[in-house]
Length: 423
Image (cartoon, rainbow, N blue to C red; front, side):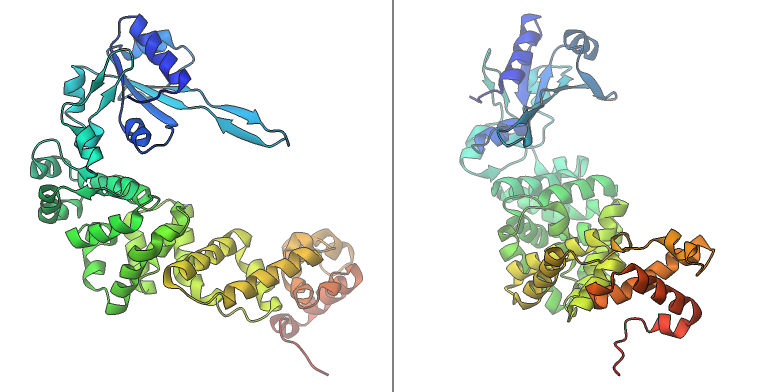
């Protein structure tokens, strides 16, 4: 059925030649059935971990507990113009302890419980191929029992909705309505992982809408936050569901869209619940704090000061998030175009924005006798850059040293450095 990657097929045949029954399973089959070429492959085999490693000494044991051996078939390919791209697949091989049918029985959903081996046959004990044809997500066995045993499966079902756009079988939908509260005190790491996968799907809006109607969004935002949503926040969520699929499927950007439906207090509370990594949490907090601020950068001086104080990486995230919000909420492009113009001018004129762009450094300030303290010299650099923000021609060695001396002596002038004095 599935068209195998050449390297993966060779690995499968190598295992079969040694007498080990082997199948491709999991997401690679679903990806193929979507009409796409799988990159990440999963094989299950009767070979033990030691036997897999003996047959593939180049493999890497990436999960000792579950005995998963990874074969990396990726390679760098240089294009005609020197650009380098990555081609090839990754293949994870694990051991099945029973029959292939017993292996598939633990996969939760019929569309996931399909195995293929071109040397043997397609194994489809739960009619997953029919469910894929009918665009239906159905559990293996009783849905209530599945969700009670493994509550995270409810979010996994939503991940399939997001990825494939399929509908839930009625009984499964009703089982989620009955059981979603099991996730309220669940370990947060797998919930966060599933949320991040849901947010980058082709049908994210459909999945979010379904999560709201079943109650699952309370497991994401927290029950108290969900209960206290205002009418405006609810309307923002509905609009987000309608339009989020029009935006680029980027994890950080779509997470920012999700949390900025709230006011700052509730948004920060919902973000805290997910226990994101430091970088993600920092960006999402910027989404809550900074989205309004960048809308009021009225001129190039304010824009450069913002870049200097927040950094280019933080600014780019919030700026790109505002562009995504424009798509979702059909907002005006005026503010975005203004910031684009300011940035264009900086690049075109090679204007100084950051300390490293100045024509002096801390050593220059100390050599000029303004201070002999390196920390104070660094602080003076942070002060004099204001004059360069006001006029790029002020990025002059003599002028900057003059201003550093002035600010070192007159603190009030330093504190009012962004004030434009008129004669």
